[in-house]
Length: 110
Image (tube, rainbow, N blue to C red):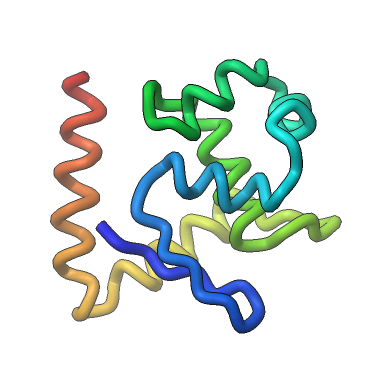
């Protein structure tokens, strides 16, 4: 799965949860970012190394940081769901829908 995030003129390909977390950390120290997320620095290190998967709340927070930065008003869950629904509803996103379905099945089984 490959997801392209455009940050200004820089294009970052996010292909894993660990890359999402590293992108969201945006140069901050692991200790500072872990404190912001409410987790230990060692947990953050394991997430970034791909040794273990974070809780959904950590992934959601990182996605918000990557997509909306530190805006005062973060989008609601409904706004996020509508954005995902709109993007995944496009016909050219059929392969991504298949991959996401497999990912969800794998997470549910695991």
